[in-house]
Image (cartoon, rainbow, N blue to C red; front, side):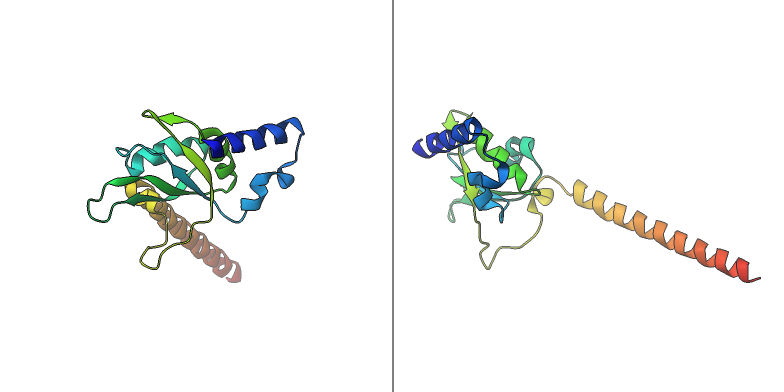
Length: 162
């Protein structure tokens, strides 16, 4: 609870003194788009957490700490946003929020992957492959469109030669 109050006090002082974003305490974390989340209800899944935190940006990676033996949530997680500015919003707005009777602790984090963790967009896989499939399909459509444009350009050049 003290950490939450300290963050709220820092934000209040910055707001009262009209501190520019470059001088904000958040600027110390410009090199990371990860946040740490504590105080999570044990019943929440990764999808539930993504749903809550997606109101401040697009989450691209989530690591919910689970018990190795039982697989149950341990009540804390790390979440990475696509855009680092979303971390500032989540820290400022969700720190101290109550979810299912538990108060969330949200702060910036410098998360380091373990050797056995895969890299990439695990949120898309967790939420269903629709986003990945859409991006792959868009990529294929774009490639087809580019090939058509190139072949049209070649046909125009060969027609000019005649």
